[in-house]
Image (cartoon, rainbow, N blue to C red; front, side):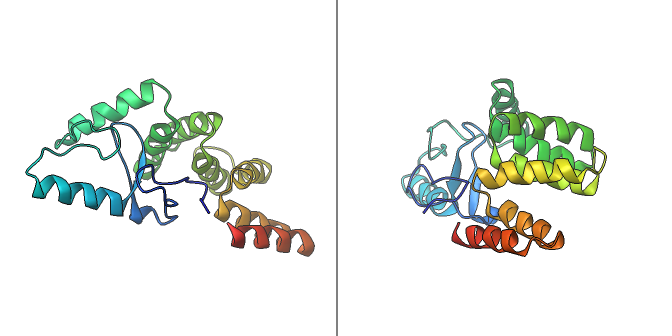
Length: 177
C-alpha cells in the first residue's frame, strides 16, 4: 500500500519513507525511487546515451546553477514539491521566515510533508511564535493526508494530555500506514 508520498511513477512501488531511498527530479518535481533512478543511469551508461530524467526525459543539467534554474521554474508555476524543497533548503540555512513562507504555500497547495514541517516550526518556534494549537492543526492536516509520523506525534500529544484511548487509536493508524 502506498505511503503519503505516493508511488514511484516508473515502477509503481510505494516511495520509501526514508528520503535517502528516493530522489526528487529538478525538471519535473517527480519523486523517483533510487532503484529506478539507478536503472535509468545504468541503461544510459551502457547505451552511451545522454543523461535524462527517468520520468519526463528532459536532459539532466550537470551544473548546480542550471538545476537551480529548473527549480525556480517549478517555483514560478506553484509546484508544491518545489515549494517544500525550497522551504527546507531555506530552513537548513537558518532563514526561518523565508522557509515558513515556502512551506505555508506548499501546505496550501496540499503538500502533506509541508504540513508536517510547519508543525515542527510551530513546536520549536522557528520563524513563528511557539503555538501548540497551530502545531496540532498542522499535525492533524498531515495525518489526514496519510503522514505516519504526524499521526504518531498526535498520539504522543493525546497521551501527554491523558487521552490514552485516542493516543492508542492514533498509534494503531500510524502503524498501519
